Length: 157
Image 1 (cartoon, one colour):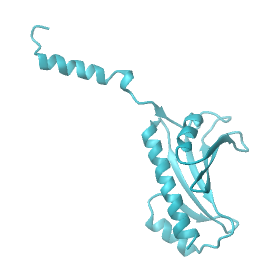
Image 2 (spheres, rainbow, N blue to C red; image 1 turned 45 degrees about the horizontal axis):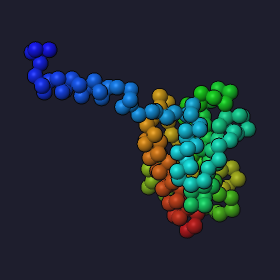
Image 3 (tube, rainbow, N blue to C red; image 1 turned 90 degrees about the horizontal axis):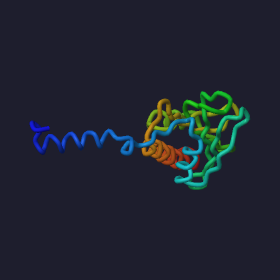
């Protein structure tokens, strides 16, 4: 200790404090549907339930538009790997050219025409090994923006 300067001691103390678990942010992954549901509620109404296979599912609304968060890679309804945002519209006829234009020009949200001829928008989110809550909130924010823009540009136009 005699050979260490006050600056060195301060640096050592700072480094050890920064590696403390108290400073680590909790990671969120697809094994935490309740935590993902809490984040979803920050973007509009949401309900946590299960799909027909018993896997977690969140049904939510952003500005009145219904969407789902589906959990994938699950083992008996638990230990899921990733999630997918999904929304579909029944009724409006959207051209394949409009869908292709969306997919060419937009970074977030994959669009397609389903087997019933209805437009759909989806966005995958890889949660393997966890992400920060802020990162997942940002994914919800991107989904919210893509959903609103898709509705305005593709569905209502």
